[in-house]
Length: 244
Image (cartoon, rainbow, N blue to C red; front, side, top):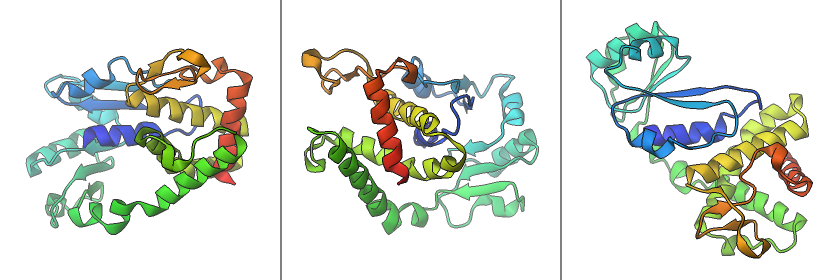
């Protein structure tokens, strides 16, 4: 659950090229840290880790803007978190119909993850997001000759398009006050993070190709300013396609 929330946050919480968002895990499970130890986030955002037994854990909770509890916890643990966060918003995993926060009567507590909400027809089918992803790919295909049809894309590339579709609402909200170039930079960060989350890295494939799916390398996994002008134009095209 924590991994899924982090991945979603990294791919959606992109609002400005100079932002710094700290994603801090308070956990004794080291799988998160091993997975993201050398991961490039492509801006000033950070992923941090604090042990539950560390004396700074309470300070971390107190300084957090938003707290998300990704495990089922006891009433006592939830109360302790409330004390540490000093009434800041706390979103906690509560799959049961009667969340324990009802016993505390605190407006700062927000349960999420009810089974009937997660396994809704819309979430399972995700038809709207898939349709948007196909439409984005079709627009890109019309602009760039030689691009494969949707049906011929690998599962990874389909999910890359779905990720872009998921970012669409954020892009539309940013558009009134943001230049196309800034949006293109944000989209490149999102794209780069999607590849990084799936263990891709920078590399130069053979035969002049952009990517090698077997080796998981891509020549465009660099900072936006390091892209060729041609690749920057492609990012601008993607942005224009996303909000038109």
